[in-house]
Length: 429
Image (tube, rainbow, N blue to C red; front, side, top):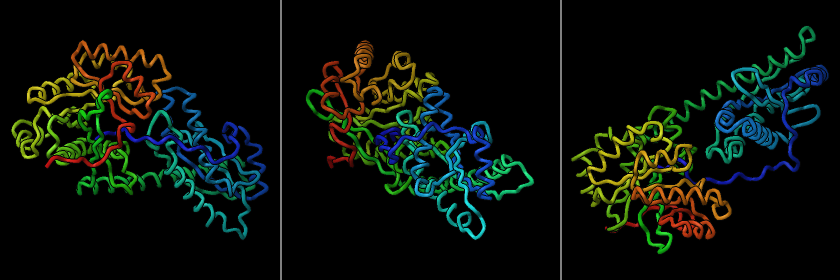
């Protein structure tokens, strides 16, 4: 259900010394040409970094440069045992369809197994490293590892051609290989996701929402998880793949069904918070008499259920959100505006949509005890909530200092690791 939850901070880079800023290989074309002539061949590892371009569009050029530098460090970590003079890590800015990072490895080709055996293994090691730790590149802007396709190729020195042309040709081979690997990987991930969806292999865990003063449980939020041993385990990866395959509505429906089923016999007086898309109103199983019968079978009432709709999804079309809010409010359900504080129009969304609950994103809560501007923002949001007769829930509380500040600001409810991690629900049967 929840898409952006349980974020691990990036580990420290393994390199002892920070790499210098990575430059385009074309800035040292003479040095590259000389290395190619001496070695007689060049191997290329190429990483397609076009997925990082969104950082520049949203957060500026410096955020993008930092991400690309972190990517280069990850590549260097994987390649470090194999690098030697005059090998280099460089960029291909302006070439191909997007920015790329390349590793140029100069080795003799006569009687050597490097290009046949070692280079493909090194490419696989880089791909594995990026799959495991690629989130470092985009932290703290995004929580999921970006797709960073890896390819490899090589070129043999031809004295009849310009060296720069030969290097570009070798890079082109690696680029084509990366594109093919990306297509193969996308097909495999799509098949894994559709298998997961058809077999309903999704687990719902429930995170407590607490009264920050009394420590009484107000309710539980259902959080979706893919298979534990899968790259689709996290909510971000799960819903991202659903969007990529055009099955977002279907996954949303499945998660709601499973979350309701897992909450059978919820303790009286506790609320069940369900993340859903505004398009849930079009789900035949989530309307009118069908929905009422489902709840009766689960010994739940509409007043026990709160629909969470993300601010990021609702703010682009208030009319659709209002339609869903009004429809479900007439049936007796409550509405929460989730991820508040992420988008620029947070206060506008709160005023326009008048939800019953306002869930403040953890990005505003993390470290709030040492951040007076965010304290003032949350204080103002709480004042607006009071006028709308809405209640605020602070997400991602992890320290006693954050909790104390939340209490001082008059925020009534919170959730986060400080109160307990998400787990299967203990039901009253």
